[in-house]
Length: 206
Image 1: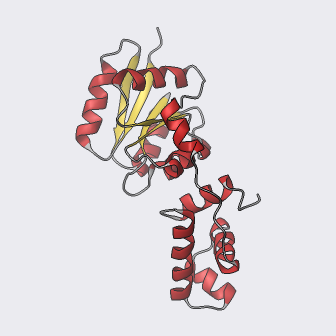
Image 2: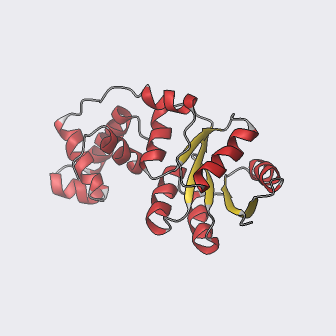
Image 3: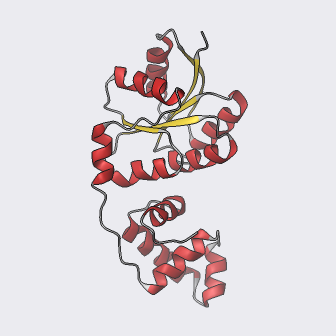
């Protein structure tokens, strides 16, 4: 019987150890590697080719959403199951938008985690009812100012703060202020999240 190859990505070693012990107790699951940040999650996945990556959303260097996005592009065969301790609709929805095949709260029962891994390995999406409810309670579409729309367009094109300042003829300090205001309006923590939210709320056309 082919075992499901799993890589665990979480910045807390105790969590990684606990998850590894839980999963290794299953006859059909094999933990092939671990990662303590988003960069390692991507590099180790490319090196080890797991079937499933159990990915914490909040990690240093590269968060789970950015790592999921990169993995979805570079190693589409690896399916991502995101875990989060934050009950916010945006963080979970962003992960699904980024290509995650499933999402669970960290408070989920052990049996639910194992079921999620097996379901995703079988080629299906796994989003339990409590997570679906969170996503369906998504807040309304924010109204962006013309300047905030300019910032959103610029970061979508990958422009740096310097590039934006030169293009718009304003100071770098002003650019930073406008981008922070945009992040606050969207409820985003960084550029990757801002673009993901904007796409999901149809504030961007691609």
